[in-house]
Image 1 (cartoon, rainbow, N blue to C red):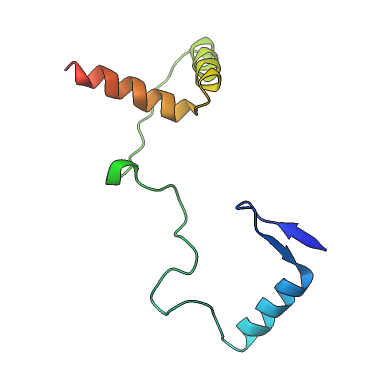
Image 2: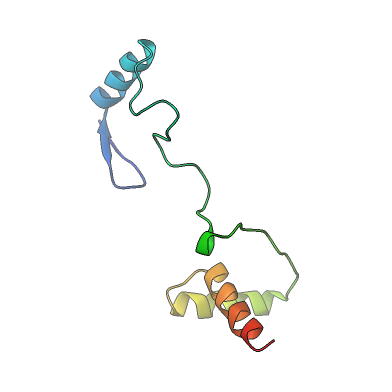
Length: 91
């Protein structure tokens, strides 16, 4: 059987068997101390640290926001960051 990973890579049962055998022998790819797989989580934007900011809005506002973001091919967060950047440019 084959398994398609999120990044598009396809692995077979044989691949998993090989990796399990290597792990049992304590053979791991890469150089010790370096990331073999990228760190989990989203990358920082513009090299800055990400922080969460939460606030409440009406369901109608959220739905309109989602429709606008979808029409632009963006996520809700992308649209909100762009709107905030535009607003702060006038401060």
